[in-house]
Image (tube, rainbow, N blue to C red; front, top):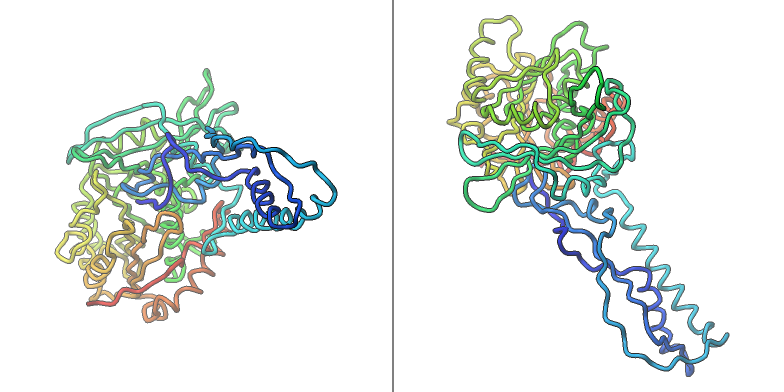
Length: 469
């Protein structure tokens, strides 16, 4: 939900181009000797980085990440006024010799800055094989072609726009040959105010005219928002540490169940259903308009192991907890909360001690062997009340560690509360002690699932506990 750094594409931030090196060298040369080389007119070399809309990726007030902004290609040029003409001294070997140290210094400084910007931040480095890497955000961050606009039942409205994907990349195996890939962006717009919340971004495959299969489908392997990657990374790694058999080779026929409260564009449930084919993914979505937008415009479709119900998430959870009490192995391995109103707030019923979700957790919404509940929160939100509410609800059933990890780009926190009945080690572990096991689990899962992004760097990034007040 919120990005922290970027710009609007209508104007640009000045960034010095190659002419800066010549300018520095000339200035340094003025003090190099009695016969400095004069530069009669320095060529203007100032470019403008294109600015992209600041309401990004499920984040009502945050701008695009610096890494994506740095990768943007210049789309407009702003020239500096030319300096007054000055008589130029003849270029001599002596003057070049005096100028050489300044040139080398300027070039070295520029190379150092370039190398610094290429280093991975906080251990997270994008892969060129990731179809949803941040470097492509400039393709969908601008104004797009309107596709759909619908009112929301609670308040506000939604809109979906289409954006050209300049880098097509290889097609998924199930996409017809000749399909065109395109970005689709879902925004939530409140009834009042100027917040323009980007809730979800998907990449879809559009079959060519006349194809037998004309269905527009999203790429489930493409998570364009880094907080979504952090979400699935910490959830899957934590389940593995808790002993939940995620991989088919270890499941021995055991069924897995995950409940997602909130559909959005459907990218996270679709990703999970694809990498966990033996897992049943259930989605509860309050707004019929969101389901319609996801299916008609964002390429989301139900699968054999992925089903959506239009219902309040709390009511769905309470019914599921009641049913779990009568079943031998009822309940869920994980409950994922990614639900917001048009202003970007998680409903109180999903995050408070007196809320309906806490009641469902206390009644047995999670399985007896253990599991987790994870909530996606804005950077500005306080995770402590959420963790305390969910931890208190699970106390009678063996609450385990509660912690947060933080997304490296937008600053979202994923609040994870575990119920570690089957894993006493995980139940007693502090967040710091979980760092290495989470990273190890994420590394193994990434290899087994052929995940295109760095799960290991995201699964325990900035892991932190939140003491009960």
